[in-house]
Amino acid sequence: MQSDTGDLNLPIVTPVERRKQVLSMDDFDSFNQEDMEIAFDREAYLKEKKRREVPVPFTLSR
Image (cartoon, rainbow, N blue to C red; front, side, top):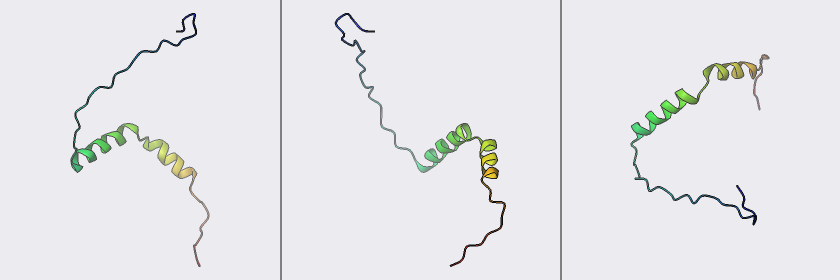
């Protein structure tokens, strides 16, 4: 919202002090596992993997 003078009237946001938390590797792994279960779309992944598949046999040689 602007006033007649053209000044912008924005709210002042003060940062919230948060307690620093040290996570163990098990806690971090649990967090990542939960995040992957929520965010990862296995069906879309498998569909894209199939689409990018190379149907022709090939070999790598020097």
